[in-house]
Image 1 (tube, each protein chain N blue to C red):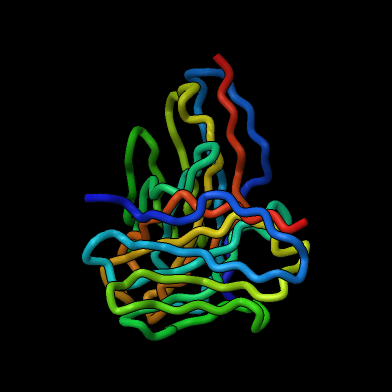
Image 2: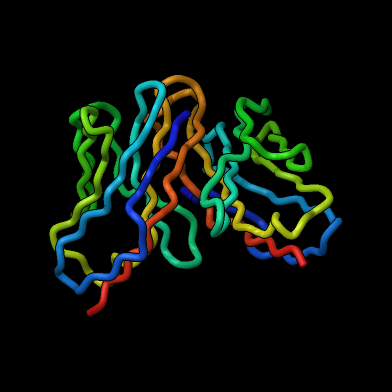
Length: 115
Length: 113
């Protein structure tokens, strides 16, 4: 089974631009979560989607948004980029939502650099 | 709130040394506990997990025991290898609801030959 794939792997943008990142979960997985990883803040939860619905959202400004499609693929969008948005964005998939002991399988991440 | 505190890094050991990385947590409910590992340039991989008190998770020679009385989930390995060099994250997820993982700050481990 293929793992979680994220595209693109690397991205360079300038302040004020917007960006869209994509995540394809493991086949059959319906829950997708997004995390931001930075040296200063560590790993922080952005949001979780299940069956095309956002189930949970972390403490991030409204510039961060996401969606999930009927095939469980997910995208996240960041508008009006700031320098502080430079980070590794990780996507994780899980078979279903609401089961705490289920493993989340992580993708390799998208490295976003904002200049 | 829910939080995870890990031993400060970086940690540098010689090959075949004994490893302990401390992890303690604060949770409002009954969490499942996880250790994830991140190798350079990669995403996170689940190393081991425990879902209830006194459970022991183990994988690849690593072990951690869910200690409810001390709210701890320390990672141990009896004899480390150079290939164990990575960043290790302790994390929790509550029994109710969200898939959200709450991570510790990570501990960078370097093993010298």
